[in-house]
Image 1: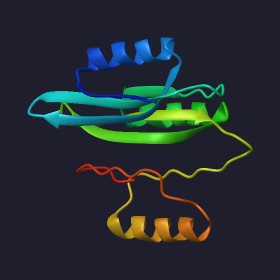
Image 2: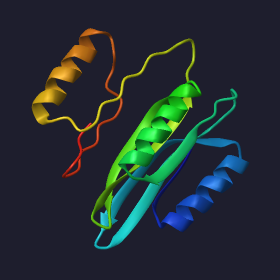
Image 3: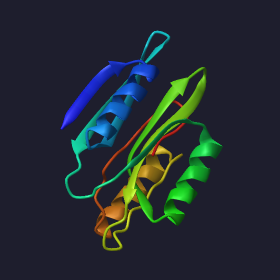
Length: 141
């Protein structure tokens, strides 16, 4: 496993490329802000079972929706999601992996606190496990 944090976007892209060349795949991305500076971090796992992931970041709402649909069409499922503020707008980062054995995943965003409570209770009753949650001033999943 490899992990890095507090990287600029350029450093993060370089680290990601280095890790891919070393046989690691991205499984977690985090973005935080200190003043005006965005800091990126990630976790990469050694891929010794043909495991692959695809990561995208800097997506606005429409881009994320389009890529989410594209990845679903390619039979990938979301494994990590990050919402962050940049230049006064909410942007998204996400990581997908191919589905295995028809595994099922559900993804929701833009939920109020009450909606989140109802959705998470329903999903838990249906055997789903909550894997990631994000919250910004304008978006909650």
